[in-house]
Image (cartoon, rainbow, N blue to C red; front, side, top):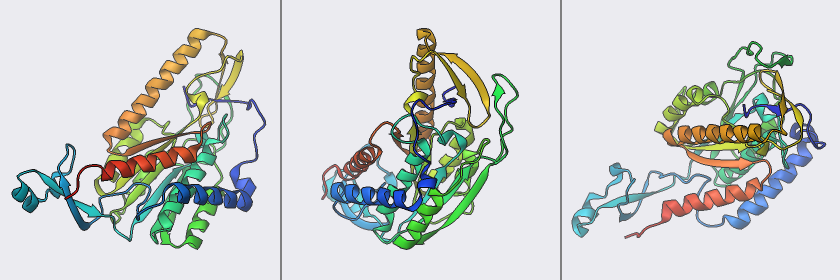
Amino acid sequence: MARAAPVTSPTPRPAPLADRSEAVLSRLQLLVTRKLDGLLQGDYAGLLPGPGSEAGESREYRSGDDVRRMDWPVTARTTTPHVRRTVADRELETWLALDLSASLDFGTGQWLKREVVVAAAAAITHLTVRGGNRIGAVIGTGGGAPVPARRWRSAPAPAGPGVLTRLPARSGRKEAQGLLRTVAGTTIQPGRGDLGALIEMLNRPPRRRGVVVVVSDFLAPPEQWARPLRKLRVRHDVLAIEVVDPRELELPDVGVLPVVDPESGELHEVQTADPRLRQRYADAAAAQRATIAAALRGAGAAHLRLRTDRDWLLDMVRFVAAQRHARTRGTTR
């Protein structure tokens, strides 16, 4: 339902980010550097500050704290439960799981959804490599088979693992820029991808504990990706960045609107002048997003939603600030 995209865009769109190449990517990195360095100054911390492994100060126990980090000597002295805080490791390994399936090649706001994916990858890369850490990526796109447009209710397009690419984790700004160039230059292939297989690439073989950031629109059925995400959360801090376009949440009143599923090629004409249809669409889209949020919450992943019609960088800054506040609130001893 919400996967369908208009056949023709309502306004002229700029060329894809991959075509605008180095100049656009350089401006994007400059924008990320200026804003993030200006708004997120302070002690060493990444996009999703994890518990680390180096012993730090103790603080009073709060509901939800890991009981394995109980500080029993301090608890015995004060008769109040305390947990031992830990300091983030200096050698952090961050992995990006970037979904560039055909449904991401769409957008009616200021950005295409795939451009928001690349922009989010640039911000995460900047926050990672400035601490001297390693960053790698796995990229998934469609299967590459041509998908002809078909009428509604025709046979579904065959699902497959799609095209999966692994970029090894390396440290250094030069290597990070090379990773971003590869991501920006990835060609979106037609056909369905497999978000579950993309996430599973980070489970096999097991990697040292670190941070994993999954960037997708999560329109694939949750039963496809929820289990691999839960397995990933056992060893890593996981951040799920959901990319959303406003037309996936509600339909405008523009009369008869041809829409096509970019992954299956199914074509349907929608009478958007019908207010009841628009309301049913909005209700179904809201239920779909609630299901996605519940699946991410059930997997134990932190959840950040970025929209193509909003300032995605400001939303990321607010998220990072909220994460740091949540990690540091409370009394320390």
